[in-house]
Each structure stands twice: as structure tokens, then as C-alpha cells.
Amino acid sequence: MPASCILGTGSYLPERVVTNADLETMIDTTDAWIRERTGIEKRHVVVDGETCCDLAEKASRNALDAAGLQASDIDLILVATTTPDQFFPSTACLLQHRLDAHGCPAFDLQAVCAGFVYALDVADKYIRCGAARHVLVVGAETFSRVLDWTDRSTCVLFGDGAGAVVLGAGDQPGIISSRIYADGAYKDLLQIPGGHGNGRPDEAFVEMKGNEVFRFAVTKLWRLVDETLAANGLSRSDIDWLIPHQANLRIIQATARKLDLPMERVVVTVHEHGNTSSASIPLAFDQAVRDGRIQRGQTLLMEAFGGGFTWGSTLIKY
Ligand code: COA
Picture 1 (cartoon, rainbow, N blue to C red):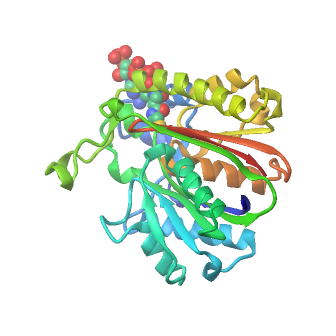
Picture 2: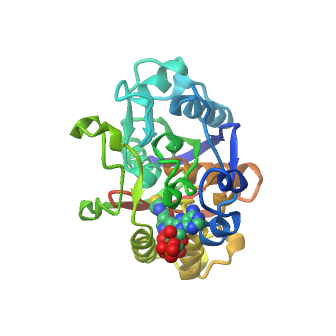
């Protein structure tokens, strides 16, 4: 059975930057509060006319270049996003057209901040069963468009961006294990309550019970990390790099403590771009690949948690 190997990574952040100091002029907050509670220093935000597909395209082209492949080599395109350009066509179809790749299946996958690990799970299964040889997996978001910029409890946390990987069928280990979960019983803790679907389009902004989300995330991620290691017969010291969802530095530190991993072996980018939802893991992954921290042959653990609730992990031999 073929394995899903990482052939290339790419990412893109929009040029416009909103710093904590900028937010101080807009809402009742301080740079010190945001840094202390979240670790975030700034976030990138799209400008008028710039869309999720624009970010996805740039990240995808970077990943294809890194993989040494053309878009025509790709036989499945998956875009994890909660903030698509349109209801339909899917952002994956829009992206396919931009890349001038035609005919291969292309679809969006919505699991909020766990979207990228969900999409890796799907891609891995396509590759393992022989249905695809090269899969483009993208996490792309314009969360700035679904924030209430007067709500200080949420608008300071999120940002826009995109990350992508090209997976290829190979005989190297690649993705060793993938675990995804959901529990809709927690739907009210983190949500965008309104939308055209329920006739409440005016309420299409993020709402969150921050404390409860924080507690649940830490508990679930601790259990997830233990399960992932046990299921694969690994011990904590076998992990070279933790690439966590970049939501909050304190949640990342708590997971690293659970793994006994020093923060030097955790890829942290949350200070640079805030929570970019499904884009956050591939953004962090690409940065650490490009700056040479992540090396071939190393063992990587990705973990994510998001609205739904959804959560999951991907274990990779890079
Ligand atoms: N600036 C200044 N004060 C703020 C603020 C802001 N941006 N946002 C909230 N506050 C205030 C609150 O109003 C509250 O004031 P009060 O005590 O007078 O009522 C106080 O800060 C403490 O609020 P609280 O919500 O208890 O803070 P917290 O320590 O839990 O931190 C979060 C808030 C959102 C940073 C934290 O709960 C969190 O990170 N949760 C998880 C969020 C997350 O990761 N979500 C995405 C998952 S994918």
C-alpha cells in the first residue's frame, strides 16, 4: 500500500498587518493584555477585493514549486476553509481554475481550525487506496471577514493566511497515523451562529466562550497526544517537532509540557499571525521547513482543535 509523502510545502500571508497597537486605537484593549493571554503580537488581514482563493493560490504555487511539480500533475485538490469566497463553486474549484488544472476532483472541507488535519486524513486515504497519486492540500482562511471588530474578546485572536502541502504516493513512511474526531454537543461554545442557511445572515460573526473553549482544548489535546503516541508505539522522546494549531501560546505550552517537549522543539508562529484557523498548521510547517529547522527523516506531530468541536492529529515521518 503506498504511503503519503510530503513532497513540498508553501504558505502565504496577506501584506496588510494589524498590530496590537493598531487594535488599541480601535477597541478597549492593550498590547500587554493580548500578548500575556494569547502570545499574539500581530495578524495579517486581507484588503478589500483580496479573497481566500487569492491566498490559497499563492500558497499552492509555492508548494508546487517546492515539490517540483506542475498543477497538471495533481489529481485531487482539497481546500480546508471556513471562509470560502462564495457559497459555490467551492474554493477548491476556484483554485483549480486559477492553477489551470482541469478535470481532477476538487472540493472544500469544513472543520474550522482542525480543517487541515481533517484534509490530510482524507488525502492520505485517497493515496493509500490508490485513488490519487499527487494531492494538493490547502488550509486557507479570511477570518477577518467573519469577525465582529467591536468584540474585543474575539477580534484580537484571529488573522488571515494560507498554507499548502503537496502529498505524493511513495514507499517512504510519510503520514504514519491520522486521527480525527468531532462532537457537535459543544456547538454553542465556538460558532458563527448566523448565515443564509438559517435566515440569520446578519449574525455571521464569530462568537466564543473563551474560558470553556480553553479548558476543553487543553484536556482534549492532552488525551489526543497520549492516544496518538500509544497507538503508534512511540514515546514522547520520539517526537522531533510538535507543529500545533496556532490558536494561543498558553494552549501550545500546555501541550508541549504534556509531551515533555522543550519549547525549542515546538514550531510557534502564533505571535506573527494570530489564529488563522485551518491555515495555521501548514503556515507553521512551511516556515520551519524553509528555515531549515525541520529536516528529512524527522518525526513530526501535528495537532489541532476547532469549533464543532473538531479535533485531530497527524503523525508524519518527514
Ligand atoms: N483586551 C482586554 N481585556 C479583555 C479582552 C481584550 N482583548 N478580551 C477580554 N477581556 C477582559 C474580559 O472582559 C474580562 O474582564 P472582566 O474580568 O472585567 O470581566 C477579562 O479580560 C478576563 O476575561 P477572560 O475571558 O476570563 O480572559 P481569559 O484569561 O480566559 O483569556 C482568551 C481570554 C480568549 C484569551 C482565552 O479564554 C482563550 O484563549 N481561550 C481559547 C480561545 C481559542 O483558542 N479559541 C480558538 C480555538 S480554535
